[in-house]
Structure formats: structure tokens, C-alpha cells
View: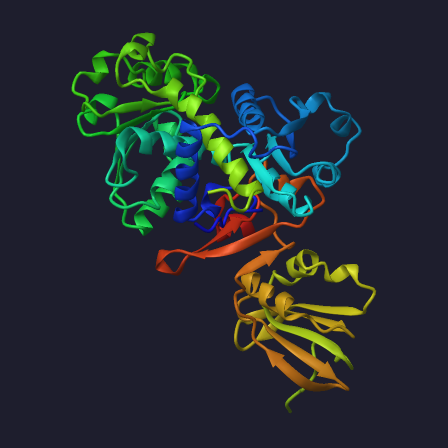
Length: 310
Length: 152
């Protein structure tokens, strides 16, 4: 199988073709069954977290160690001399690229990973989240989890709940699932946090069905995947939040009419949008989803850094 | 008696951007950074025009605009024509066509886009929407905006 991801920058899920997504999913499944500690032996990878993100960073770092590579980097952009001295991101990346085989970047500003790729002198860039824009490895692990639990990525009914306006995970996942056939979307959010028009328009242009709904219970009997996200308190007026909170909290009661194959996903951290009782139901899959992040990240790192290893 | 008098002095050699909608001339000067050159520039504002009623005109001596520059004019000034002049003669007439992408000229409306603060050039691609509408998508933050939002 030709590895078209070799030496490619992983900036946006939109840059990946469907067969490339499938390559990652296939590799993730292989690595989940059998670890490959020598795959990236002698490679050095920079983990540049200009803003804190514990889960993503630890997941990437675990993936790197499991592949036998070494890491350099930082986990808090405020405490590095580069930012304190006022160096531009472009210069920072240019310097780091001369030390390593790949750079993982997390940055609060949208487009930072794309900019980094322009200054990395062909050293591959992995976007670990750029502001509210993209987080492609999160989407890859989401896809891997959906495929693992449903045995397919097409002909699915997917409900997305919570902050659909600012939540980049739901934007990217919708864009990725739109590459597959016959998927149907249900968007459930407060009025002020609805899915942006560019996503809705993309679905319309591709003839993909989506519906806005008010309550999870309206669609629970129709869906295969329930993708929960946090309604961010700071984005709403206190009365709006109180109202949203009651509508968008998932309890075991809400799951009464769920299909047996339903899986609940969440990019985490979960605050109070999923009752802890739900954790003990067979539908709860968010912690297994987080664990899958290791395999998806191992897969994408190895595919980008090694041309032939199938 | 007919008075054939040029509203703006003729140039010996260079580019004349004609048929710019009135009120847009100054905007083009700053956006396209025409004023950053040492070349002599003359500008006419609110001149009579059969085609537009009123028009602006920009003449830049000893400068020939690139194909990309000319096409980028089409965003603000779709009816503009660019005339190349040599020895006071018209040696070329070009009608801008909307380019596939536009670099450097526009500012991303997304305040958190990296293109604002890293000394890099903005870059947008045009996305054709239904009803002949055009959106502009920022290369960096990947956000898509209606043309009017980016141009305002």
C-alpha cells in the first residue's frame, strides 16, 4: 500500500483524502493489536505546546515513547525564553526544525500550524490544536473509535450536542464524516451556540442531511453515535447557561430509548454535561475513545515519518 | 466646440488603471501599496465617465503591473481596465479577471488568526457559492467569510 502521508504536514482534517484517513485507521488498528517500539527508534520529535493541554500532550508523548522515539519540547508557552524574548513563531519553528525530525505544535491562535509548516524547512508539522480551528489527531481518534464501535464510517446517524459554535472537534468530525456516504447529522445546541454556517453550507452543498433539534431525547432512538461536548459557561449569560444546562445534560434517563449499538463519545474534559451514572452504561465510550488517541497518534506519526512499514 | 482635454496628465510610460468606481481609487492606492514606490503617481477622483457616471483613475509612471496585481484589482474594481503605455502610446489593454486567490492585500476578519501578528502576508482563496455569491477563505485560520465582510 502506497503511503501518501509520508513527509506530509498534518494541519487540517480537510487536507486528508478519504484513502489517507483509511490508511491511518488501518495503521491504528494494527498498532492497537501489536505495539511497535522500534518503529521510530533514533527519531527526535519536538512537542511544542504554546498553551496547556494535558491530555493531548500526554497522549502524543505516550505515542512517541511507544514508538521508541525521543522527545524535546515544552508544555507551557508562557515559560519559554522564546516567547519572553519576543521571538516570532516563524523564527521559533525555523530554529526547532533544525534539531528534530518532526514538530508537534499546540498554539492558541488559529492558523499557527499552517504558518509553522511554512517555516519548518520540510520537517513535518503535526497540529495538536490551533485555537478554535483544527485538531486533526482528535478527529482521527474519533473516526477510529466510531469505526471500531460501529464497524463502518458510512450510513451512520450522528448527534452532536453542546457548544457547536466554538467546538472545533465537532466541526472537524463533521467535515471528516462528510467524506463518507449516507451519514446523517443531528445538531443539538443552545441557540447562541449553533453549528456555524460554513459547516451547514458544506453539508447542504454535498447533499448531506442534517437537522437541528432541541433535546437529546428527540433523537436518541435514531442515533448510532452521540457526540457530547461541554457547553462553556463563560460563553453564555447566566440565565442562558442555566437553561442550556438542564437541556443538554445527559442522564441515564435520556438513554431510555437508545439503540443497542449507541456509543457516547466526548473529547473530554467532561464537566457536568454527562451524569456520572452514564459511565456505568454500555453506551459510555469516552474513556476508551481517549485511550484510542494513543493508537491514532502512533499511526499518524509513523506514517508521516516512515515511508514503508506495512 | 468640443473640448478634448485630459482630466489627468498623460504619462509617457507606465500603467493606467482606468474605470475604477469612484471612491475606490484611494482604497486601491493604499491596499495595493502603490504609494510605497518612488515612481510618480497621478490620481483623478470623481471624473466623468460614460460607463460608470463617475470614475477614479490612477496613473503610475514606469511601472507595469503584474498579471496577479491586475487580477487582484477585480475584487474591488471589477470594471477596471489596465492600460500599458509606452512613448505616450497605448501598447496593451487588460481586463482584470477574478483570481483564484488573493495574497497580501486583505486582512482576515478573524481577530485570533495568526496572520495578524507574525509579519506574514494574508492569503485568501475565493469560494464560489450558490447564487453567484463569492466567499473568501483564509488560508491560515480556514475561516470562510462573505466577500463583503472581508472587503469592508
